[in-house]
Amino acid sequence: MGTNFYVQGHHNSNDSEWHLGKRSAAGYYCWDCKTTLCKNGEDGVHDSESEWYDKCPICGKAPIDECWNGSVGRELGFNTTKPALKTGVASCSSFSWARKLGKVQKIEDEY
Picture 1 (cartoon, one colour):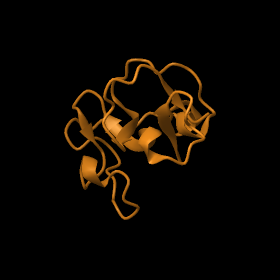
Picture 2 (cartoon, helix red, strand yellow):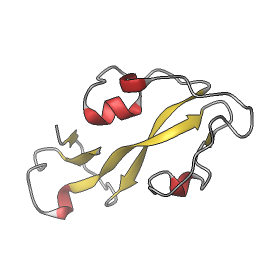
Picture 3 (cartoon, rainbow, N blue to C red):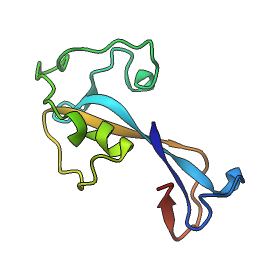
């Protein structure tokens, strides 16, 4: 599950012209080494058949247990806190663009 983003005032529209993209939880990422723990790289984070490292393949740090306080909780609506600057291995999100933004002034999420 993720969060869709739209031009403000158009999130109930069926017109794809107003859909900007989707933010989704993207698994564990080493914020120190700037690398995903997905063995298939960044392109594989949303592939259900991807395999994952138990710890960072570069520095060996293990993920911190975030449960609902990380990106998964944010995408499901349980975590509404502002994300802090991350270090070590923690969850992350990705953004998939549906269209280029252009000169739109205001954006809203679907919630």
